[in-house]
Length: 186
Image (cartoon, rainbow, N blue to C red):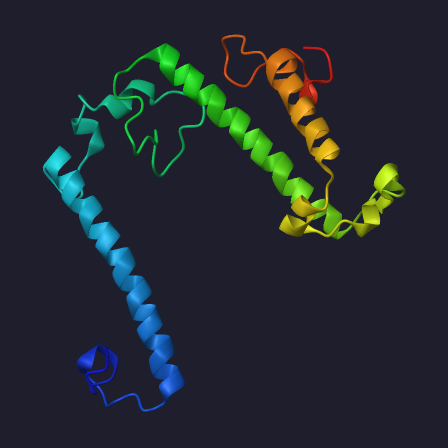
């Protein structure tokens, strides 16, 4: 790390320990990014013949099978780093896209559910039999141990009900024919 030559080895040594630590941390982070970048450039060079390859010339790419689908966005285009769609199966793609949309929606609900208790809690009792008020439940992950098992059973039953009866795949990823939040008409 410290060669005693300063910035890019062109200057005088950095004597302040805090400054040297900050600059070395930045250098490590940038070095990691550069390592990932060069591997990507090697990969692209192998596929297209150039580190700055023109993907339009690589027409045999399995990644191009779904280039026109909803969700394809610049700068990546169709993003499938693991190669799940390399077989080109439209049905498998739709099933995976459906799963992706569903998981995204659940994650959005979970994010809201994590944020809202910081600002609002329902009045009254979460569990009257256990004398547990909503206001007594801590925020974040600490709440996991406070919710009674009966409450977790209700949450699992509700999610299972939606999974089995409300969110039924109808051939178009993300469209369950039930309107907003599965509560309305199509």
